[in-house]
Image (cartoon, rainbow, N blue to C red; front, side, top):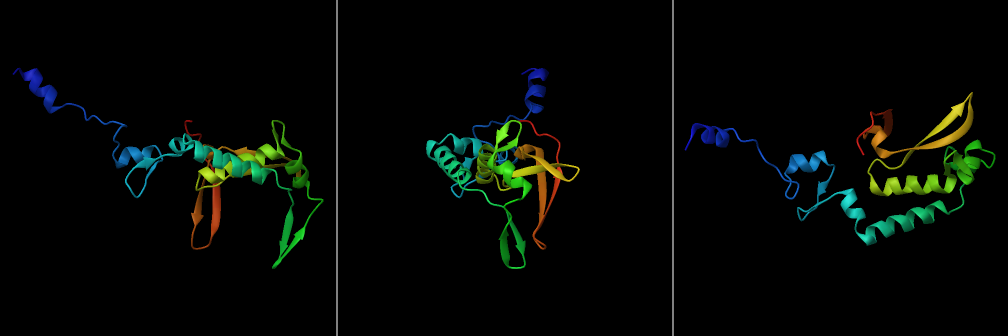
Length: 160
């Protein structure tokens, strides 16, 4: 055996496969192992027709419900029919998305992610102009379990 063969075998790079990923690879791709040890990612679950159809059915059903805006005072919920956000949720949320599409997509995000669905209300001089859905990969938040407070921050875009 030549010295090059020995060196190549000694210093060979570690080879990994996605066919049987270790814990580090599973974490990188955001998948979680089930109780059986089988890893199921969101994208893999969505390839199952029953899962994809369930998410579509639930999100479209929720988006088709009548939208109301309420103000909470103490223990009482009060309807606010003149709230400026209500018109956006019922008609056009922004230039490229209807209120139905916005709600449907936020519910879809919530069903597929622990972070839920997130949107930003754009105000100009205090006047509500549009509601923009954040793609889950563009926003992250930390939840303080002690206080139950959600602190959000804009994150650098993630590939995808």
